[in-house]
Length: 115
Image (cartoon, rainbow, N blue to C red):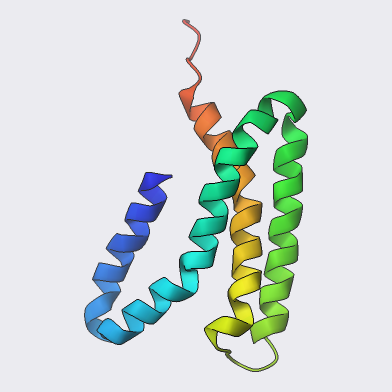
């Protein structure tokens, strides 16, 4: 999870000089619902993965698709929108990504068998 957050910070630093500090702040504010949803749901989904298994990840992927469709509806017809228009859709994207992030962490933590 931290590499994802860190890489977004590196991207912001790389693009920052071209777009300016105000645009950086607006972009960080606009993406905060995604990060909040992802972080909270990844902690909630981790215990559920042991009980329900892949169904949790499948549910997360379905929520991600719904969030992507909502984001397209919020911005696709207007060519752009304010943060208040697409924040709920970006939050849904984060909620859907949460179970996927939790499962990736579990897979990475599993020991490899010898041989």
